[in-house]
Length: 117
Length: 185
Image (cartoon, rainbow over all chains, first blue to last red):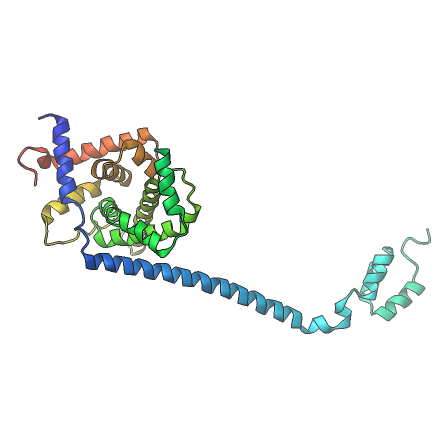
């Protein structure tokens, strides 16, 4: 008997002895039921995830739109100091921290930095 | 050959209706459980779990299957990855439970067959490295070619041959009596 024959014998012995029992119809059904349940759970989980994300996004948008600051006029657009800064970039930085009326006065009273050189 | 693969692909690539998926599972279930059982050195409960995980992943990934390999190669690659994931998870669980040494794999106690022989074979297979065991199972027990096993395992053909040689050498010495005439069960 050659080594190949002996190896074949060994492999056949392992093959015969080392395998699970054939599945009974009941076990097949149980396997299938468990697999279907997991597929269904995953599909439902996916749908919940999509609905959850959509609901959260909608809620966040609603909160953002309804926030109190959104209705306050000075936050609805640019402040006058911001407009001044846009029109005239030379407006001193510090005037931005003054109330709008004072900013107008400050612009009239105070010379622009470097403007008299 | 190419036409056969394309036909098979076309069958599988149809929208995964429940019926089509049921047929996919039915055609591969027994073999998937058997391969997992052998690669996990006889843990029957884990083998069924692993096979189910593989089918779940296949279900999710089937729409992305591009037909670069046969459906079976593609599916058994998923199965082998699930086996490997299970082994890692088991190793991590053992480490977390404070037992750094992996406990022997549980071997099912069935009324049929020879439980003692099954335990010996499980121990001998368990003594192989996971890579050697996977190659031995695919090539010698599941009768895949070396090239098919290499494709499933994502390894070079030469690497598969080398693992195969070492696995057989180890099993020859561990189960020497099974090689001798008249001693096989």
